[in-house]
Image (cartoon, rainbow, N blue to C red; front, side, top):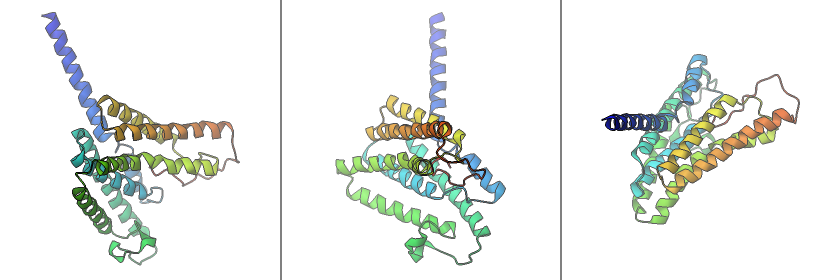
Length: 254
């Protein structure tokens, strides 16, 4: 009798941990963008947030969803991509409306102008939606044509997770150029370092496709390298510390 009660308790605890882990996987990636969204709405200033973050994450997650048609992976990861896409579209909508309201230049730029000098700098949210839809349809059609090719499918999966894994490199390079991490949110870096570590461990434990955990390890490596920069440049300053907070921010950290 006692053994049955103990087994039930262990089973309930196991299910609880599984649900918590699943929730962390699905919603953990969007959490850092919640304070950013609130800050933009409060200040009505989107200057500190790069919309190229949204571009990279939209491309990465659309490709990941298409990858699932050729190589099955856990449904939780599919929901993670769907929720991230929705989050990035919400961020784009807010940034576009704020920028349009405060922009002095009255000339409207649109996706159908096909002016590459203003790519991803359009005036309406509808233009971003048109671009995302066009990319999705084109990528879906190519995937449909080459779905029987194992090489194409594996390459598609690698491109999806590798694109996301590279989000930290702009900040890494920026810190190296400036010889400083001034203006960078250390708390934010710690948040996505812990998140990437958890995510990579989850990939390994659930035996996700090799592309997922390989690029996850790369993400963690970039995260820890940036944290090392924080230590190194604070311990061995390379230039005088400025009293003006830098507006240069990481594509990923934001």
